[in-house]
Length: 301
Image (cartoon, rainbow, N blue to C red; front, side, top):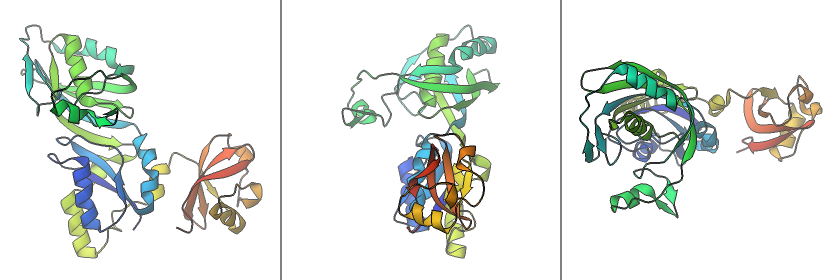
C-alpha cells in the first residue's frame, strides 16, 4: 500500500507511538509522519506509508495552524501544564487589551529558542534527555514566522484561547511562555489542538479507532487513504508521453518532445513540477533551462 492518511492523534501518546500503532493496524513496512505533535496535544498528524514516505519533506515544510490555550501566572519547566511548576506570579493588572498589545510583537518573523524539553539535538543528544538529567544548556535561537495570532476567547482565570498560524519549526509552548514573559506574568500552554498541516485539516481526519474499524470491515484503507501526490498540489502538473516516461524511469532529463501538451518554456527555471504518464503520478521534477530534470522517480517501483 502507498498513500497518506490524515490521522487525528489523541492526547497522551507521542507521535512515534501513534505511528507504531498505525503501522500494526495497516500492516505496512514503511511508515512516517509529517511533523511531530507533542504527546499531550491532539490534532492533525499526516501519516505517509509505502512509497509516499519519500515525500515527508514536503509536509515537514508546510505551515501549520493551531488553537491553543495559554494560562498566565504560572511557569513550568516544560512550558506546558504537564510539567513541574517553577514560578507563580500574582497578576493584578490583567486585561485582554494588554495581551493584544503584546501579541503584536510576536506577529511576523521572530527568533525563538527551542525548549529544553524538545527533540532538538545538540552534539548528538536530544535536549529532553539532557533536561531529564537536570541539565540546562545554551541553545541557539531559530528564526520562525508567525503568520497569524489572534485571541478567540478568555476567562477570569487568566486563560486565553489563541489561534496561531506559523511556519515549520515553531514551538507553540515556547511562543506562549515567551508571551507570558513579555507581559511580566509568566505563562504556560494548557491545551493544544493542531487544526491543519498544509492541505490536511482536522475536520477531514480519522482516529486510530476509526481506521482500525475500516481495516476490519474492508481489509484495506482505500476509502480514506489519499494518493501520495495529494501533498504536492501546489506544484504544476505536466503530462508526458511514452518516450518521456522511459526517460524519466532511467533518471534522464526530458524536453518538449516528451510533453503531451504545453511547453517547458511556459514555466520558470527552478520550478518544481509533478510528472504524470497516462494519469499516473510517476515523478517529481525541476525545470532547468529548457529541460525537466527528474528529482524523485516513482515509476516502476
